[in-house]
Image (cartoon, rainbow, N blue to C red; front, side, top):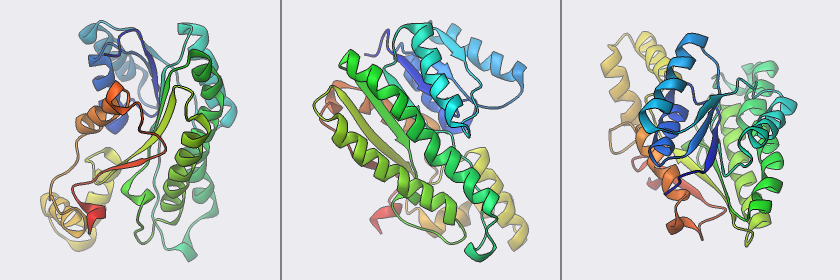
Length: 260
């Protein structure tokens, strides 16, 4: 379905981003991986996807906290492949504290990576996608782009902002062959969430397993984690002809969290 398309997936050396990269590669999309990690492990991931799915995979270590670096990532991809079809803005970080104790440096870092990086990527990618008359921009937001939780001022603000950006870009590209949508996962068992489970286990003096159940029980009626593979399938759907008229939307994949 997506053979010969080219996709950038930011924050794709682990977790949600890696799951999305795998699912797109299964559909024969060439992939640009991005993220931090051990160089040897990243190379193993890159070569593994390339070999398993017979697609071209490159790695670009652009720092998503730097707007110029994000824009260079887009330009370098177009120079390397001659096109850019799919941009998945997935890179994100988290920090929790009450608003009156929230460190300003953490506020700026979260907004830079979770929101401003997407703005710079979209701004740089849209002209190329319009030129091709086809493009898919998919912003990985969060349930916290739709509702709030305590102690997550920066994350919630950034993810709400990302959904607002999605709506504006959806309107601005309507009718051009380019669509822009947000995917809003609930709890996904990523390294980011593992830390929150560990913190809860320590705080409440319970097992890791019980902490995971408690985390799900507070918010997610399905009592099951969303998987990176499921999110990859959602992204693939948004890149399919069935989704040609879906744009400017926020699609919740959250086990019923926001239905409450």
